[in-house]
Length: 328
Ligand SMILES: NC(=O)c1ccc[n+]([C@@H]2O[C@H](COP(=O)([O-])OP(=O)(O)OC[C@H]3O[C@@H](n4cnc5c(N)ncnc54)[C@H](OP(=O)(O)O)[C@@H]3O)[C@@H](O)[C@H]2O)c1
Image 1 (cartoon, helix red, strand yellow):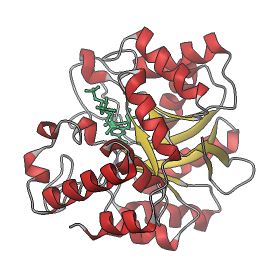
Image 2: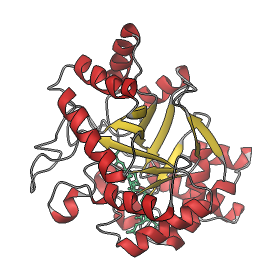
Image 3: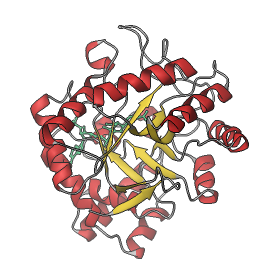
Image 4: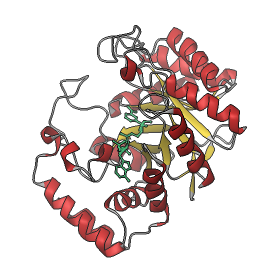
């Protein structure tokens, strides 16, 4: 395994593996036994960075989530897991009532939600301090200063280590960080967005905004990261939810454009050349990117995880990387 530091303050920064494991479906779609086996295999391989959220996975049973955090809590307790594993969780998108969703009834980012939901996450995970807590989605109804102060209060109390943000427009991240800096408060240091080698169309309206898809890493955020190298970028759905292996899973609305076949062809060529799988080339491309990325993979079996873990040791040559970058 290889490792990377997230955060800058020596009191809260952590060393994490360059491959992060998503636990979104653990305890619901992925049964208990398989989930625990995947977690054990990940830890054995030196993996130290696990991702969840308070609302995972509410859609699996029409409830309000919590199953993934609870399963991680059981795993931590039964294996005696301590500080060596960083567990990131999120709040803000959990539905406020069964049968609803983050689209119509999200808990949001008020000071009260930040306090109460983070406490519930600590209880489910069995942790006195959350290692990394993200704002899962934007809450335009709450003043940004309230959200910033709400998160900072938890850091001051010591119930949260690092702060992160997901699925926000770049300007909202910068504004929040600006407010915090002016007030001398800690703020988001880890960003989590959707990103992979294939590019989705950037001109489509998103689920939460007519202006586009806030969750997709684009040019604004890439340029932001270049100018703020102390920030860390975690990228979700790097394997396009299995879309490289089963292209029928790719949403035609997002991927039906000339860049897709060009990039798939380059990927297959480089995979053949490198003696690796297409998924592994994608992960190696992300891990070794000029603007560093921590891919956050999902797996529904230890075999899938094993394939992803092996990508950590795959070093693409400069020529292979150039070939991948040139395809568009
Ligand atoms: N911040 C956010 O809003 C947000 C949103 C989405 C996800 N996330 C986080 O990101 C994590 C990963 O998301 P994701 O599951 O979409 O990521 P992903 O890595 O793109 O997709 C994982 C899925 O790809 C398939 N897969 C993985 N390895 C494979 C292999 N070797 N061969 C064939 N298929 C393979 C599996 O599908 P099958 O199980 O169908 O085989 C697996 O469940 C989540 O667990 C969650 O923690 C965050």
